[in-house]
Image (cartoon, rainbow, N blue to C red):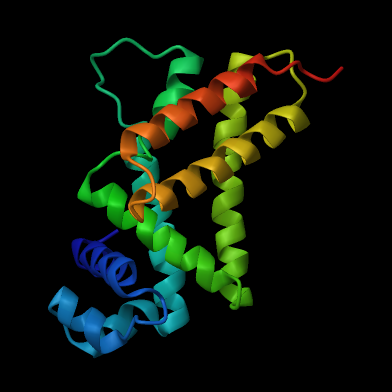
Amino acid sequence: MSDRRTALLEAATRVIARRGVRGLRVEELAAEAGVSTSLIYYHFTDRAGILRHTLEFINDRAGRYTNERDPAAPPLAPRDELEQTLLLELQDTPAVRENSTAWGELRATAVFDPDLREDLAKATLEWVQEIAELLGRIRPTGPAPAHAAAAERLTALLEGLSVRWLSGSIPLGHARALLAEAVEVELSRPLPD
């Protein structure tokens, strides 16, 4: 991805996080990015293109900050990798706050926008599959549907905890503790035959 396009998507994420999807105006996005509106249209064609590409950007950025590891560090055990991947979605950094807020705005808008709903469903499925794969590495004898169901529960809980933390309903430490507890519950749950 070009530096210019990345800067535009970062600006779109900031605007969506701050003003919501309904508040996203191409003129404001252009001002936020310091470019002309024609450049926005050149890169994204229309508002739907901006939303679709911003969703992909948010998903990719989350993948980067939840999967970054020190190359010199020993590999994590699958359970530690699962916990770290999930808990890194609950950290008080500008990128995580922005990403999580914009993700929530896009999810809320998808209720009324079938095109966005499809893109969001695809991104959510990829995330659930990533978590299910980690669960499968932890409990290799478990059936794939059980891992998928556990991944659905954990990612849905994470989204809800993120909204509560970001809105000030619960402290970050409490959200992280609840998520870690949920991982423990899922991993101690008997596997179906």
